[in-house]
Image (cartoon, rainbow, N blue to C red):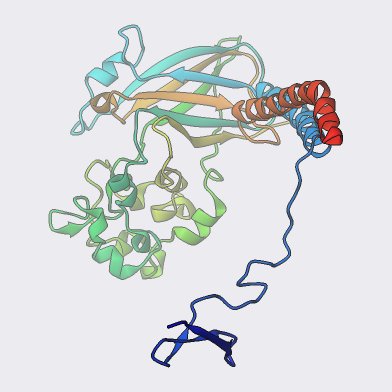
Length: 367
């Protein structure tokens, strides 16, 4: 028996009369612009007249920007010293070989070096580590942000994420976690050897090295006892690998405890196994006198941080900065590469269009 089609119902759907006289509902979508995909849309037609200028414009813009960024990066002065002490000729070789966590007498090594050009403006001193994977998942999670923000309950009861560095000798660790336990604690001092034979210590600023939001928002000391940190942290213990508790990191009360800037800088984990972190700032004295004149210098290192267990390396970096930050040639190279590729593709497509474009037009006309 043939099936008869009836008119649309009040919802716009088509009703179908079945062989037994029943009414069936069609699954066909409504005849609307949205459901039938007839909405107006932008459908660009890529032609030689639109594509080729885009390639050339991108190339002409990116290449000069890349050259400027690359030249600016190369103008930044940078000096680096590896003081790991792996080689026997290194002044820090004995310290690296005789290191012990239980030693009460720190090992000190002296490294002479020469700056062949003066450093103007502010000079930034970094410490660098290699083969140190701060991006490991369990390492990154091994911290208690509530404790670092001064929460008294988290101070006495650290998070389980800090395990196995949450408690020691049945006392809560402050600060807890693997990140804090592995904090960099070498001491670096810089001296200028004057030509007349005097040894002048270079002043190093230990504040202003952390992010403002970290210093004033994310990290706070617990309140109470008239801000006496010794009393505030009573009942807690220092991390296992630390030589002194957190409330003795600095004599300055504005740079002590959880708001110590060396500690804050270390707690911001690095994304790559080879990284550098800001250690000190050498402020500019005068516009007429370079911050670090060329000449002989001495780096004195109190060797406290072992790296032999994970085959790492330690280094000290002196660097100036520019409007784009520190030395990083990658951004300039990336701009020049993209611009050159776009310009080259533009030339190739222009030759192809000039050679074969007229042939296609004549074929379309004849047809």
